[in-house]
Length: 226
Image (cartoon, rainbow, N blue to C red; front, top):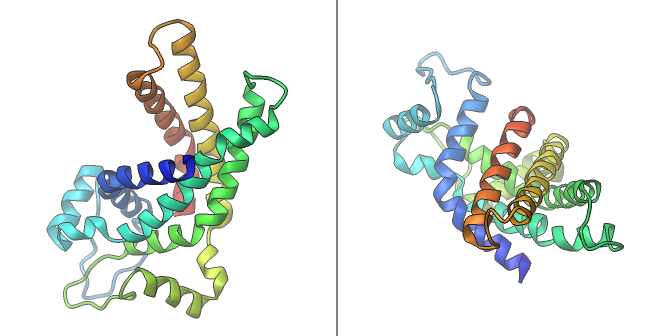
C-alpha cells in the first residue's frame, strides 16, 4: 500500500509541477550547448520568465516534454524512496520506538541510493526531453518515450541509461537526508509542543519546511546532475 500510495501521490504532484521542473532544467543547462549559425540563441531569465519564453517560442505543450518519462520516474522513484523509508528506519533502529537523527540519516541515505539506482533510466529520458529545444521545421531525436529508452540503449549502450548516476545518488542522498529527516523533526516538534495535532495542516507544514530545506541544500548537486 505504501509503495502504490507514494508513487500515485508523486505522479499527481508531477502533473502540476512539471512545467516548473522543465524551466529548472532549461535554466540549469543554459550555455551548455552551442547554437547553429542560423539559429537564434534563446536566453532564459528566471523561472516564470523561462516558462513564458518556452510558451512563446515552442508552444504550451513543450512545458510537458518528457511527462511520460517523468511519471515513470515518480512511480518507480517515489515508491522506493518513500515506501521503504519506514521499514529501513525500523531495521536500523529496531531497539527504540523513537529513532535518533543518525538512524534517520542512514535510512534516508539508503532509500535514496536504492531509489536512484532503480529509477535512473527514467530520469535520463525525462531530462533529455525537457532539455530539447523545439526548432521550427527541426527534427526530433526521439519519436516517443519508449523509443528514447531503446535509442539510448542501442546507441550508447545500457550504461547510457545510467549516465550521471553518481551525482544523482549524491543529490538524492542529500535530498532524502534533508527532506525526510527534516519532515520527521518538524512534525515531532509541532506535536511535542502541541502547536498542531496530527492532521493535514501539520503534515503540510512539515512537508513545506522539509521541501524548502532539501531544495536549498541539494541545488548545487542538482545542477551537476542535470
